[in-house]
Amino acid sequence: MELALTTAGGKASSKTVAVADTAFGREFNEGLVHQVVTAYLAGGRAGTRGHKSRSDVSGGGSKPWRQKGTGRARSGTIRSPLWRGGGKTFAASNQDWSQKVNKKQYRAGMRAILSELVRQDRFVVVESLEMKEPKTKQLVDQLGAFGLDSVMIVVDAMDKNLFLAARNLHKVGVSEAGVIDPVNLIKFDKVLVTVPALKKLEEMFA
Image (cartoon, rainbow, N blue to C red; front, side, top):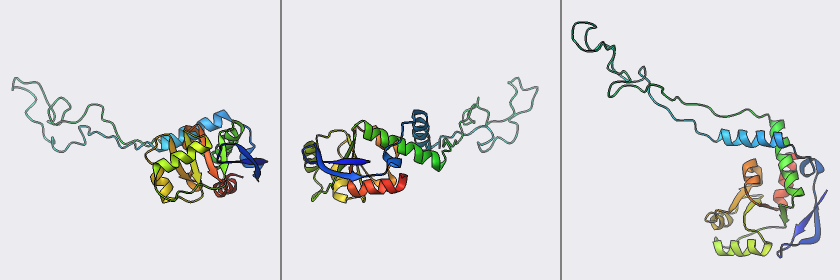
């Protein structure tokens, strides 16, 4: 299939780029995309929340007083949850939230997302995107020329000037093609990809 290059005015030019149908012409599989996105978000959860139960708190090995005859309620340990300094009743433990997704499933999900972006005209291909200086205003002007506001910029190799210029724009993201993830692809209204990055995506998912 052929993807049209976009000019600085935001219109499709006469030039096109040939890409593989296997990567950019697949049917949309909503269930698979949902599974891939959910698994990616779940894998980002730290799961490091943790409390100490009565067995985890140090001390409390001996019975504080004898069972009977003191007039006080019976007690087996000073580390009971009822005591100050004791363990927590229902202690949370570290948890692994990651979900298993096969490489084949992940690649198929990414193909479905890329293909749907192309069908919805949310996939913008440009020759290149270079920043001479790390100036946010310059990047805003360039994106404005393309008619873009909320956009994920995908490049072949990370440009420091581009990264610095985009980091203060909450509706603009920058990523290398080799590490692009499904959440960033669907998070923004448009995806702006350079031709070298497009070829890398084709190699990864064709």
